[in-house]
Length: 275
Image 1 (cartoon, rainbow, N blue to C red):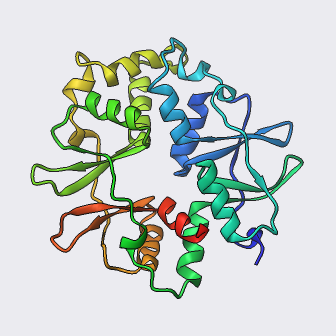
Image 2 (tube, one colour):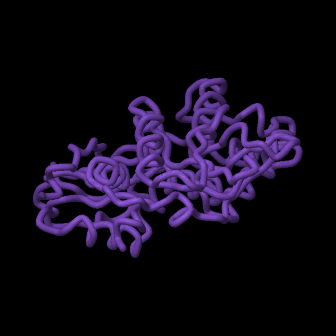
């Protein structure tokens, strides 16, 4: 099997685009990454996590339409289509990336992601690996009544792009991701009128300030409600199926007492394949 057999055609954006253009395209197409193109050739890659960590941690007085994509984009990791799935998974884990590009700087043959590895595992693995064998016990969470500025600060400190929200009984009830924060940013920008004159610094301070809407808004006001769960003793292939069916990056793992035991994510499944 060649990697191109399970890869997808990448969606691209021009290098001279702004961060505002990138966010809009990610939201409109429900994507987490874009290939950056210059003069018809691949020049880099940009992910929603890259944007989130930059915008919420860097002080800038520039408007969203004036922050160049080139300031944040990362280099592309190219691989040959003859590379094995196991070695591809190893490269993803070792480089802490979520995707690889099949081809070279002169031409793309496809983009290969953790999602493709999850699909392959579900379709082809006949082993009896359990969720408990590969789950991550450590996870980042907050509570429904936590002010938004504390949620964002925790996401930045832990360098995560999503955080689990629990109710007063410690039950998982939702998730907050950078994508949720992007939507709020765009909405607030539109309220200001012409986004070319709208500075992200104003929004950033609003998110992080105890005096702004970051203190008035609570986690429950922003979160995407509902989480998909799986039992710790279910097969890893079951986790793959649930992740793909629900288009999520991970599942909350419950122990025998229905309490949160950890997370099983696309990254964990990628580690399983790399081994």
